[in-house]
Image 1: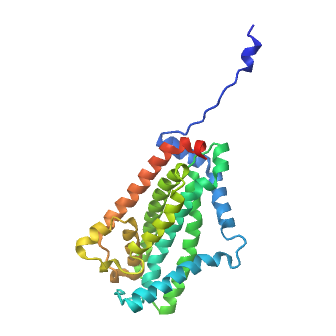
Image 2: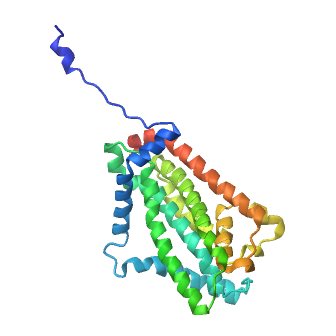
Image 3: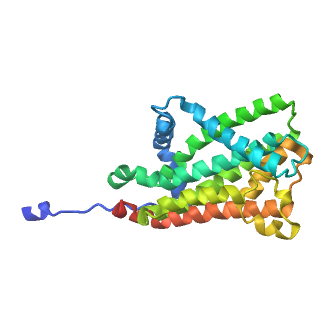
Length: 281
């Protein structure tokens, strides 16, 4: 007979994430209900106990557009590519605001969900990915404001506007890729909580939001396009303004490659470090 002492042995159950891409995708599909729950919860609590609620998603880019239109349009008198300067700015503010909000939300998501991560196993990549949904909702609301703005100025968008979803996807890849990197680093090095707001503020002024990228000297345009949002913002303006907003193709392709690389490398780095998250949280 087997000794009863053997039955009292303690066993540790170690759960490790799957490493193959196909298994990882299957896990995301398997946990899709959790993804929907986290995304919907973030949408509900985003403006909870605020006086004007979801209107904040419109007020912030609107106020920034007014300031940039006055500073760059009226005072600096930068070229407006033949369109009203508020439309020039707001068509760039949309993708930038989406990128900045999505990146910040995803970079802080693991810290916000530390209790859940340390107790229950699920694909950790769901957390920063679901946090981007709130920013996407804000983007859609602001997109409606752009429509009203064009009606106000009597501006008819170009047929190129049908390509806007493509540039939205590029912005999403850039935001998620950067967010994956920052979220994983933020778990171990909490200094990144203070670095991210600085990166957003700095990125706003080096991206062609308040001005057209055509003001950048030709010899620097390709180097300038290493900023992934340059190609995205130029693409959004082209979708709204048509041929009046020429797209610098070498710079656009470079920005697109950088966005894709950020996403790919962010996923790889996140999956390589996620097994340590529970230890630091």
